[in-house]
Amino acid sequence: QVQLVESGGGLVQAGGSLNLTCVFSGGGISMYMLAWFRQAPGKERLFVAAVGWNWSRTYYADSVKGRFTISRDSAKNTVYLRMNNLKPEDTAVYYCAADYRRVGDFRTPTYEYWGQGTQVTVSS
Image (cartoon, rainbow, N blue to C red; front, side, top):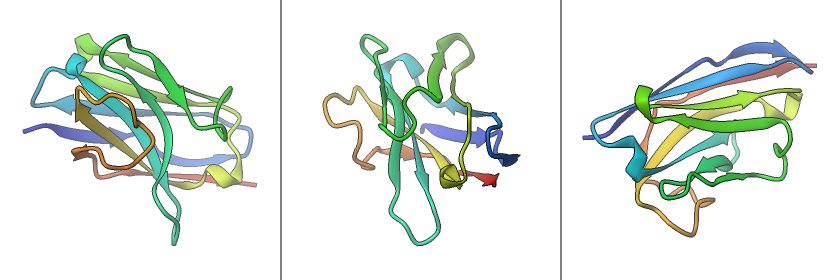
């Protein structure tokens, strides 16, 4: 059974940076599409970034492109989200997600496995 555990959230001022970490267990991480989503109070869960399982291609929401970087370390079974130049509108609970050999639609939150989430709060 795949399990995902996120960490690294916190409170940061606008313009600051945070590194989120998601530790993957229970399978071969290299065979999974891995993604980060976020959900603000009262809002739907939205795609942030993803890294593919086949060619490790990366994908980003327009709102974070150029500021966030997703990466995967297969040796450590870990996926990261580096967040720079944070804005108050980035405030949300951030979730790590995984889906076995997923192709195509990486933006829809229909991934099979989810972490418990980590809170990111950006003050103005």
